[in-house]
Image 1 (spheres, rainbow, N blue to C red):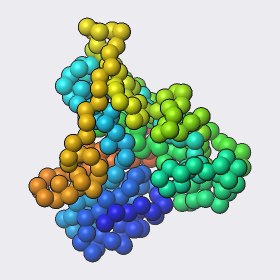
Image 2: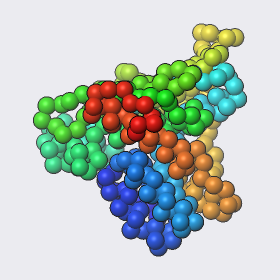
Image 3: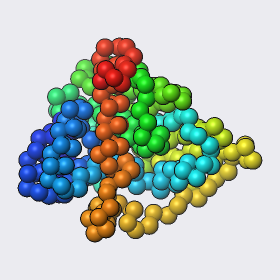
Image 4: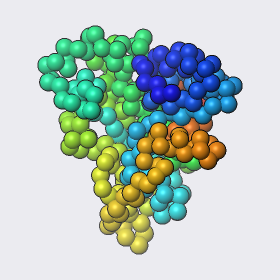
Length: 288
């Protein structure tokens, strides 16, 4: 079962379909809250069926190549994850990325669920989860100690279009920035700043920008940096449906960013980020 409802109804839909004993692929973001995420995990575990949360960036070849290089020790111990991503806005394109005029997109803001807080709208929920979930994957399942988030407050809108989250880990700081309003859409032309990830380790750095054919690697023996061709995606790691079918056929668990375990870590950071932005203070993870 593939589910892609409005964010604030993810839990409701899992509650509807899980009792029928079906495997579920839920399109990102995971949930509107950690409580909803835990409820969905509980429901799917009770049926014994697979549950996967699909993060499309998990299928970007550059991000998977960066993880391989990280796991191989290419840049030593990971200390920082820097993430910046988004698009011009969710109303500037339709299915299959069909372009919409600027005037048409602006007129729809007041009526679209993307801009309704009660429906789980806003750039933070739309894009922060990519950074915190893949970031948790890169960090090896570690949680930060505390989270500080600042959001813009656009006049006339219920939700933010820009958020910056700083997460303090025992080993350093990471930054996750979610943006509606990039100058260009990254799947057409990379904006500045570029959309993607930069990983900093004790012995080097890796940059993985959305949909680019190479990642950039700096190491002690090549401080100027070198371009590394991304690993081609091979079956069964080319898309979520293929991957989940393989898990079903082999009996393997869902792993990585699609797993409820890693996605839950990302959701914990999101909940702390929302609380931090709302209360304008730093939030310890034990509080969220």
